[in-house]
Image (cartoon, helix red, strand yellow):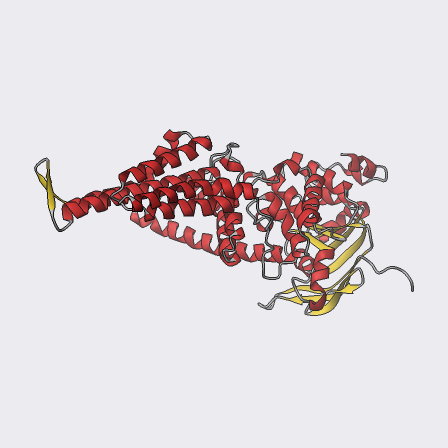
Length: 259
Length: 253
């Protein structure tokens, strides 16, 4: 076996919250380098709990998580958090520094970067999300879509191997939604996206995993999964009203990507 | 940056003072105020000179003097207190317009008004030319403990978020017929405050998670850079002039 270790490997993950609620009950997930995977599931399926295991915020009750072959355990947390960047759902939770630039610098500074190197990281990350002009502004003076893009920049600045997004399309207006897709499609990075926004998953991720009751219920091509009405219904997932089902046909995907 | 919450007194334009390093400005302001306070109150000309210095700095900063005067009104309550002193002071009195006024009280009142006004004017100039985030960074560079500057930074950042939530809750409450004007409606306001507290607490937890995810281990990275001697010279000049006035005032006393 000389294959490189997968970017992410979750095996038999169990997690019980202190109040006794079982959030994950034997989740398995393998993501290879460069893959873009959507984790789909209704509210309360354990999506966010799974996400918080990927960088060691939560410690598994049972089971293992590894990032690029490195097990997620306390001794490796520093490196794990460099490798896995999580963009949280509410940018107000993520952006807490007085200015955009300082916030983007927070992560790489924690990694020990200083001076010009730090400046360059901040500049690159902000330009990747098209927010260079706003470096000295206060986060609360930005629009919601802009704040989400800055939140993405704060994570990109750490140059992670795996980018994890929690409901990236939540609360975005259609234009901000499209702008974010355009940015995400330019990134050459392993991407895991936690969402219940099925068209967004189709647009960004060739592969999807359906998570329900703390277990991976299905894993396959996003298009195929979304075309399976019975599967979606079983897991309380639904395509929105007005969704063009032609996008689920073989040549439809390319059209969808261009949207 | 507009002049909404969080930026407060800051006047957004690019004057000469705006570009100076915040920590130098902080030290300069503090030095100026200390010099003013140390000036003997009998030497009134010294205070006039200090006043001219503040006005010149304000003009150099491109601040309208009218604005400076309006912002000085913040000290009115203190002035009201100072004006009482001639009436309640002890010791020898002078008769002015048929009223006996205490001499010591008059001097004290003059001292409070003169020194207070100059001090407030200097801080108004500082606050109008330095954005709050820069002030925080300035304190950091002056080695104020990181815990204190971090509390300040968080407060400024989340003040807006929490006021926003409070507003939305108020609008939602009033949309359902509540006017929060009468005592019996206080219950709804109280419940709202409780909910806001819990929400803010939960947000605190989420912010911490997000910080941890970006490698936070308990100390905020500091953003210290090299000092600019030019900035120091410019920022300390008013303080030096005021100190010279104070020393002269003591000598010719």
